[in-house]
Amino acid sequence: MINEYKFRGRLNKCFNSDKIYIDESRGSWSKKFDNVIKNCLISNGVVQKSNFDLSYLHENVSNNFMKTDTAGDGISNLGKLFYEIKDEKYFDLYHSFLYWLRYKILKCDFYFQKTPTIRFWFAGQKTLTRYHTDMDLGHPPQEINIWWAFTKNKNTGFVIADNLSDCERWYGAHDFDRDLFWKNANSNNLDFNKTGESITTKANSNLIYMFDSRLIHSAIDRSGDDTTRVSIDVRVNPVEDFKSGYSGGNSRMSAKFEPGGLYGYHEKSIDQLWSKK
Image (cartoon, rainbow, N blue to C red; front, side):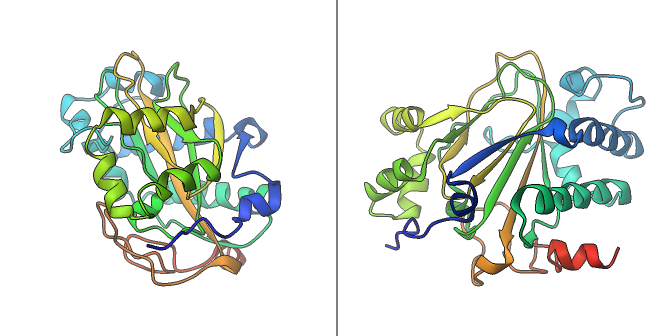
């Protein structure tokens, strides 16, 4: 099997680290996303008002929107609605956020996930622990994953490995067989999960996490938390590092990670998109 840990990732080249943390207040992004998400909820008939804290969204939506059709992977009916969202202001803000990341943080052009993944982890919702990397879902190893909870929660329910070396050793113990690793990740094996616990740390609210997509991460149980977590997942792929041919994997959407690919990247890089504005 192929060992995808043999090259130095973009973040490590730029910051000498496999993951970095960004104080979101540098761009006041939490308030902006809070407003646009609430406007989307109102325009789609999910809520009737905007004067509430998203951390208590579960008190303002019907049970139908909080239902999930899978065993604890965080995809609720409300989350599915945001897969198909067409709101212009929502995407304008998303593109502005990416443009800010490009010029203030990464300082390189990149391809990016066309539609961001917005997750609503409702208070009391059960969570499946599944240690994995995005490579297990067919993503290119050159990607950078951006994860960020813009609600304030005691338990974000998300953990990330601290470095690639630990992840390489763990995958190496599986002969870099990602299908085997994915099978074990879904088995709820106690020894497997203890290894995951030993190499990961919990993410905090209101910090933007940017990490090498080869870092192992997972949702963890937060059903004891009485707040709802609203978070965003985005993948970007530096144009200089891009390699074609990645798709599918074990993902729900069978995405094709090419510019303009089905459920994959926007047809334009962030520089190409912004030059047209």
